[in-house]
Length: 203
Image (tube, rainbow, N blue to C red):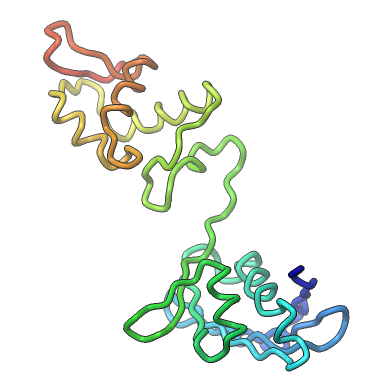
């Protein structure tokens, strides 16, 4: 089913402190309201969808739109009482909300801002771990250099185990052997003359 175009009124009907209410318009017609209030680091969303729009994907479009607008920035969690309505529950699920078994509230972190094309952190997950290695050689080298700067200090001489311990928090799936090999292959880490230790390459 095609999601209809949903426009959140650019001037919220209520904007007081950490509470905002938008009127929902579909093709210029009133389709309900979105009420959002922030408490601490959580933004609770409440949707009221007009009966004639409950089966037309409006809820999904509205949730996607407010996540895209990010009116409270990237450091909040969005919450919604999605069990109140089948329509809202389906929309929350499609927007990657997950139900908390303790209180039944559906939550998801705010989307991360889209990084610039030259921002190497786009290859990292939310915890700062590599989620994929870049295909382009220059980007891969830049990512590995980023890791090397954070994992090692000039003058370090480390055993393989110590290197692995330093790399574990960056390695995708905990595969430190591949990450260590990439660092050596890209001349960012080298074996010491004795062959028993590793040292970062300083330039």
